[in-house]
Length: 405
Picture 1 (cartoon, helix red, strand yellow):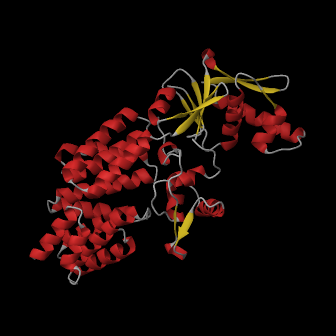
Picture 2: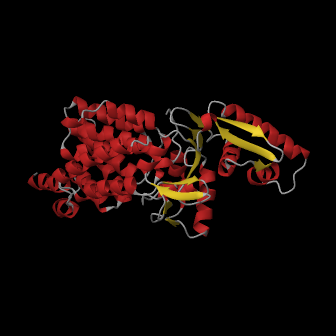
Picture 3: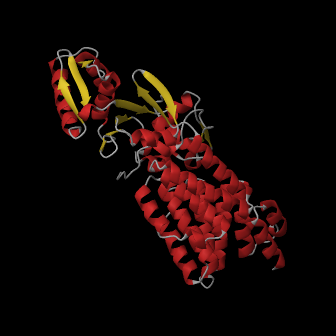
C-alpha cells in the first residue's frame, strides 16, 4: 500500500517515471490504474486507455468510487487523443458518483473535461454556462489552472482579449503553485496563441496583421467589417452570419474588397461563380444572389447597381474594412485545428468542424499531397498531425457551431 501511495504522489507531482518504478510489476486494479495514468503522462495514450479500461473492469460494482476515477482518467486520455465521440454521458455519471462519495476534486476535474470537449467541438454557449456554475476559489491549484484555461478558451473565442489575459494570469499563478511543468507549458502555449497574429486587416489597399486585442478593437469600432475569419458581415452591434451561405459571403467579400469602387458583373461572375464566359442565365443568377445579399445586409449597408456592375455602400457613411486569415489556404479550417500539435483523427476533425468526414478526408489528402500534414498509423488508428504553421492561428477565429453575439 505504501508503494501505491508513493506512486500516486509521484503522479500528482508530474513524475510518471517515479510512479512506474513503484507499480510496473503489479497487476492489481489500483496498480493498473496508476500505470495507465503514468503512461498517459508519458504520451503513450493507446496503452494508457487499455490499462485504465482493465482497471475499471477489475474494480467491480462494489468499488464505484475507484471505477469512477478510472472513467475520468480515460475521458482525459480520450480528450488528449482527440477522441471527441467519447460518450459524455458516461463521464457525467462518473461525476455524479464522485460527488456522492465526496470526491469533489475529481468531480470538478470531470466537469472541466466535459467543458474542454465542448470547446473543442465549438459549443461555446454550453461551455460558458457550465463554467459559470463553478466557483474557482474552491479548486486546488492544478484544477484552478485547468479551469482558468477553459475560461480563457471561451474568452478568446468570444474575442474578449482582456478577459482571456486575466484568466491566463490566474492560470499561470495556479500552475506555478501546482508545480506541474506540463500544466505550466500548456498555459505558456495559451499565452502564445493569445499573442500571435490571428487575422489580417485589409483597408484602402493595405494589409496589416492583427492580434486578438486588435481584432476586438476593430469589431468594436464604427467600421463595417466583412469578416473573412467567421464568414459574417458585422458592425459593433449587428452581425449578419453568412457561413451557411457561401455565395452571398463571396459576393460581399468581393464587393468589400473593391470599396468604395464598384465591381463589374464579369468580375463577380468569374470570382464568385467561376464563369469564364457569361450568358443571360449567369447574369440572372447574379441578380438573384445580389438581391438576397441586399436583403441580408439591409441593416448595415446598401448594394446599388452601376453601369458596369454593383457597389457596396455602408450605411451612415462609415468606413469598410475586411478581416482575413493570416495566410490564404483552401483548407484553412483543417489546418487551424491541427495547429495545436495534437494527433487528430478525420472523424474528430469532422465533429469539431461540423462537416462530413468525407469532406475532411479530401482536405487531408490534399494537404498531405502538398506536404502540409502527415499521417501516423493506419485504418481506424490513423491520426493526422502538422507542426504549427508560422503566422497561422489555432481555432480561435473559426466559426463556432453556435454564435449568439
